Image 1 (cartoon, rainbow, N blue to C red):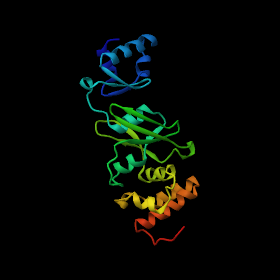
Image 2: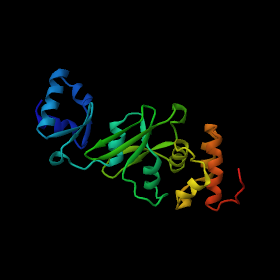
Image 3: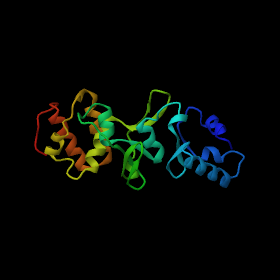
Image 4: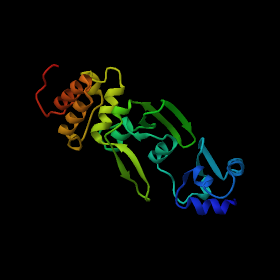
Length: 211
């Protein structure tokens, strides 16, 4: 396979899987050797096993960090501080792209940035949606409510009143309080239910009652 053929196959996708090429006529070993040569030549970048990205001169567009997070880890969606920051619910800049996954937790330090993946149980792997990005790409990201619940769930002491106050949640109109309650109750976690009531009170939705 020639590099021009790869560019034609990849099209507008700056991130691609080797399975796209292995579906062709050439032998798998030949394709893997060719990919290795292109990596050494600086034409493509290997993000992790079987996942590659076109080098800068050959990209038609720059991949969004959320797209990279989805592609380098299957069965994952962007959540926690990254999703909360995207929705404007927390004021801090979030340099690390954080996601949750049913796979093993890990931190990937790539040339394009740092990507952290937190493990959650399969029964809690829900509450995410497909987000359409500019340029035609789409990614899986937690809803505002699920992003907050994921953060609380995965943080020791995440239901503590001082921790919740320290998040400095802003733009509360972007949170559906009833949906927040429903999702917490569906998990059956006393920690999440307790945290939700404290969040509701902190945001001035109801009078606070010690739980």
